[in-house]
Length: 193
Image (cartoon, rainbow, N blue to C red; front, top):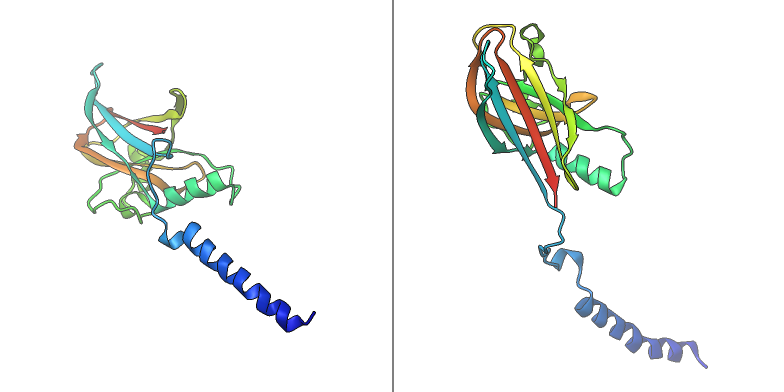
């Protein structure tokens, strides 16, 4: 048998395979990603509470959706795909007086306005207290006590535990001016469905 006849005989086979693979198995770039009830969904809110000096009552300043940052999205991607083994948890909370718009591209709370720069007022980043709230549901909380007068606070961030420059998510809340011994409680609730 001649080789050229063998090659000519295989051409229709390869042509049929190419047509089949392009019609039955479309390229990823042409696929529409459909949402389904079983799709993984991340949801997070930050709730903030204020307690004035001498008071026993906490006043809710609001619960707001948090903005997951690009760094946060990559953290989830790397953690779920096991592409980067970091042994890092996201449980460090920060505060700020945010005077710029929050955006997903920021790696620092409010673009670098967090109160870690003013530790004398009692607002350094804190390791959040973790609470499991059921399957796929958890929270991290922290309480700060002001040691300064007239401190304006209106934003919070959730960072990894080793570096506050790795902002996972951020949220804003009703602006509050804290006096000496006033307290602020921030709780990040997170769940996946």
